[in-house]
Length: 224
Image (cartoon, rainbow, N blue to C red):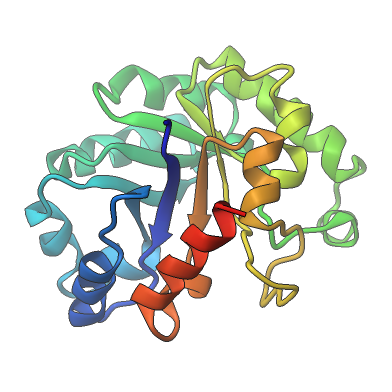
């Protein structure tokens, strides 16, 4: 039976906590990867820790967003870490997306659509005329045109983007309960997989409190 896949968000600068997260999330039921964001990689020992992490699926969530030359230079600068996935904002434009994909080698380039902390009201405040669904669909088309390996979107938009993007879809904003924290567009793990998500990104619902119990809670939730 195919295993469900989850990236655990390692959102901390505390190496001991990260080690505990990795240790306590080991299980035989769910395929686990580890997502490291700007908070960790910019910490004093973050880069060194990732460079020594072996036999784990690693996701470097840099969310690169810049001119093409800076984007590709950034990917080149972290290739020695030998991570599996790196994110870039699709809003950086087609040229940047193509430039990064060209130099990525074995690293999978993941296009980030519209953040799950954003809703239609937020978009209007930023200055976008489009609604969330329309914007995300357009971004997914651009990711496909740039031949990216995966995209990040809310689980609410997965069915929509699967019409135009045929590779891996990674969905953050996953919650076991109605507690959203700073997220706006959220969904439960079961709903997200049902919609067609390939990978879920889960942070606080796993890493806050007893990690082993939280993993078991997730396993139980998915077996219902």
